[in-house]
Structures are given as C-alpha cells and as structure tokens.
Amino acid sequence: MTEPSTRAQERRIVVMGVAGSGKTTVGSELAAALGVEFVDGDSLHPPANVAKMRSGAALDDLDRWPWLDAIAEQLRRPSGSVVACSALKRSHRDVLRRAADVRFVHLALDRTTAEARATLRTGHFLGPTLVSSQFDALEDPSGEADVSIVDATMRLDEVVHRALLSISSPPTMR
Image 1 (tube, rainbow, N blue to C red):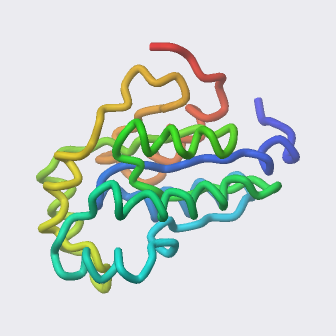
Image 2 (image 1 turned 135 degrees about the horizontal axis):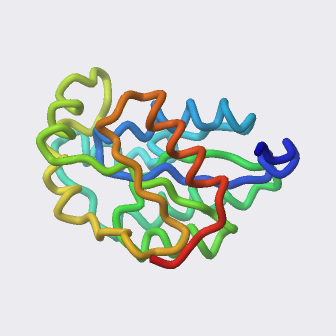
Image 3 (image 1 turned 30 degrees about the vertical axis):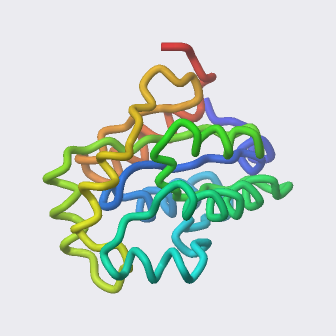
C-alpha cells in the first residue's frame, strides 16, 4: 500500500544516530524515495561548532542548542523533508518534536563499525576520534513511540527499505 504523494510530501523525518551511522547517505536516499527535500544537519552547524569538532573536541549541549534550533526551523517549513541530525539525547529529540510532527529513524550500529566508517570518510570535520564521545552521549531511544530503530549495518537498500516501512506505519508504544 502506498500513501498519497501529498501525504508523503508533508512528512518530516529525522534520520538520527552517531557519526558514521550513515545518516547522510540513508537520509538522501529516503528523501528521494519520498519526493521531499534532504537537509544534512551538519550544514546547519555554526562555524564555531565546526571549528571545535575539526580540532577534535566534542560538542556539549551549549554548543548544540543553536544548531538544534536551526534544525527545528527547517522542520517548521510547510513542505516535508528528511533531515540528518545526530539527535543523541532525548532532550535534543524533544526540541525537534516541539517544532513539528516528526518521526525519527535511528540508525543503530556498534562503536567499532562507526569508527571504521568515520575513518573512511574524507573531508568531514568530525573525525573518528569523536565517535566514542557520541556513543557516550547517546541516550537509547528505544521505547520512544515516534522512533524506529533500523540496523545500520545492513546493505544500504535494505536500510532504506526498513526505514520506509517504519515511517509508513503509525507510531507505537514499545
């Protein structure tokens, strides 16, 4: 069963997870499948955040709040979108929930795989040394009704397929 395109184009999806989980890759594929805009949340970081991460320092919540506000503004737009955003803590997700009716797709994977993927990335300001701090900050979203958890270690097409299935069904309490 497919949903009407107007409904899909009103969707607001946040693809979340630690660095190296595949947020940008999965998010762009998911947006294309839904026919909506893709926004990489990394592009919304203030220059000071980028400089801090590039230097190898982890962000704290004071650094993240303005960034999350920029992502919330994106989600308030009248058209649907898929946004890649780490959304590591429940309080971060709550900021985004207050902005719009949003569904989250958490790309779950182990620390070793995330670090290996981050090592292979080139030209990104967040290096593999910060992956550990992201796992430390991550608050497990299991049990949050609007969060679907997808195994990010599967093939890309399977991850996207599972993400599409998860957002096409109503949220459920776990």
